[in-house]
Image 1 (cartoon, rainbow, N blue to C red):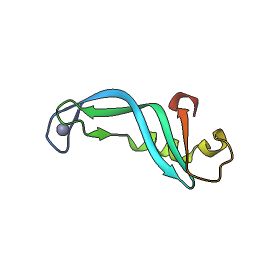
Image 2 (cartoon, helix red, strand yellow):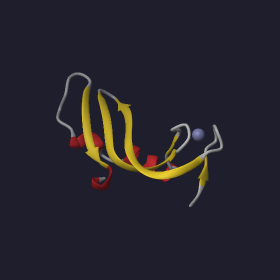
Image 3 (cartoon, rainbow, N blue to C red):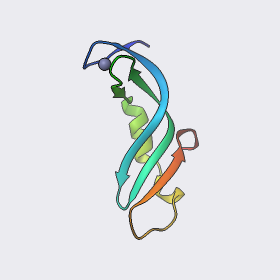
Length: 79
Ligand SMILES: [Zn+2]
């Protein structure tokens, strides 16, 4: 699968990168997420089903009970 960067028209190469987002009181970092990264400008593209899998998973249960913003790291392969 070949993708072209929507910003600069450069070539997107397949990589495993971190997907970071904030959910409720947690700052979640998902490691080794398959994505496409522009070799020219670094623009990142995640496929919709990848993002959906992350957002629909029970990542919160992986983390400890917290009262304030906490960073939670999970591996995409473990979802
Ligand atoms: Zn680009």
